[in-house]
Length: 230
Image (cartoon, rainbow, N blue to C red; front, side):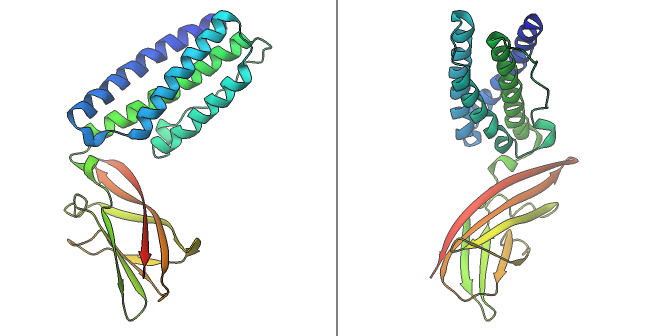
């Protein structure tokens, strides 16, 4: 089993290095595609792999802290791949063993496979979509109406894409409490108008997804915006 895990790690590490190379070339050419959290996670991953290798070589008994650090990295992966099922780490059971060496090699494999998926997603997303890497919700404009409050979401690069454009609002919080909302798309000017039947002033937190369909693929771009209505 030790030999298998080592060989499996080396194979997956080659895949990771290829995907990582693609990603770093992309952000060198297009700095706006840099994912700050991914770069930080990559550094954290490299440090942990070095720590695991040292523990294996020197027979150090620090498995508990390594498991904790590993779980921290693995918990960030779904966020970085937008919870896309085809980029999530597949489940496979850890071999039953009292050997720390075996457990450490199992953890290395989990980490390298997970990071390979993240870098694959980060690099392919740019090449697959013409211009979508720039899309984001740039601003939220508030306006009082006869019926309540209207929040208008604008996006410089998202608005010109008139077809196959959707918005999903996961939740809107008003002063920390969730609000029920109705919203509608408005062509050319905004991504969406969100109408709230409340005249109260306060802090609104909007959590949602800009969704685009392109070349038979679906691309979800999550966003969060906070706005103060006075």
